[in-house]
Length: 112
Image (cartoon, rainbow, N blue to C red):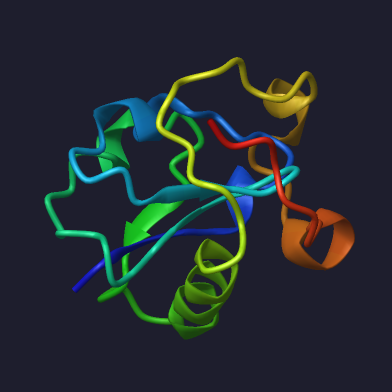
């Protein structure tokens, strides 16, 4: 099992999760975070830290596309280990449906 970042992180990008990760397995895109599935040790400390509730265990049904997306972008985006401010539109974007299709950016973030 691993944890994956899902749709609700897009255009929120809270980074509370990266601060508590003991193995630094988060990677940063322009408007989204991902978890590297081969680095995640399944400790689960990140899940309750996410204000947007965007982190889920990959054992939940229907998360196959998110596992694939997390793995793909974790291999090309920079590592992030330091908490930063969320995106300015985070509160208004929290809970919006269909963010992957509407807003997902393949551009990398700044990383550490």
